[in-house]
Amino acid sequence: MHARTGLLSSDEENALSVKLVFLGRLEDLAGGSSRTVPLEPSIDAVLDSLDPDLAKALRAPRVKLAVNGILLQDTDAPVLKEGDEIAFLPPVSGG
Amino acid sequence: MTLTSSDVRLLHDPFDPAHELGAFTRIHPEAGGVVSFLGQVRAGDEVEALELQHYEPLTLPAMKDLAERVCQRWDLEGLLVVHRSGVMEPGDPIVLVAAAARHRRDAFAAADYAMDHLKSESWFWKREKAGGEWRWIEPREQDFEDIARWG
Image (cartoon, rainbow over the protein chains, first blue to last red):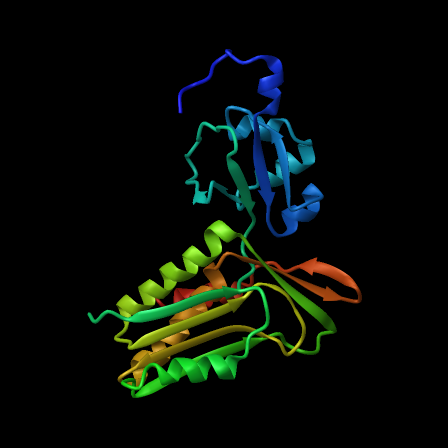
């Protein structure tokens, strides 16, 4: 994969997206278990593009994140790419 | 440490714990003891249904990691972990853990440890339906205390 910077037409850029997955009670807040949103370079930027109440809930300290099934550590700030799946994981309620 | 075979499954449909336990016991004749735990949906509390939600990329891999830790920590002949996901009704089996060992203490401890860690660490989100309304269940403090016993 090579970096694509500013070489795409706006139509092609619009087609680039990431998938957000909401687990547990976050599903109710988001109004669905997943949604596809336009690709932004960072998770912060993706969150900024959402409804502020939802973004606040997703940024809660006890909500963990996984990108493509890999759990993020607190300090991780991955650069997102087309097709990434970002999961928002509230505290588990146990099996 | 001997190489232990573990059988870890995440099921979306009901299962028969007696059948699973019978099959597990039969393939481990060298075990002197098998300790099992069955968790089922509790009747009463006006709960009509329970739903466990999982996240495919995390839930089963973490269950397998846990099974591996259990097998390294105790001397087992075999370990079985079967866990449901999806909607269940009161009386339905949720989880079956069985540990087969040459000696019973290993089997008791391994099954106990596996359950404590499944309850508090597994990637499951739970909601209950009562009076026609679904409600998400928050983590229980007791589950964290249970897991703290193991150091």
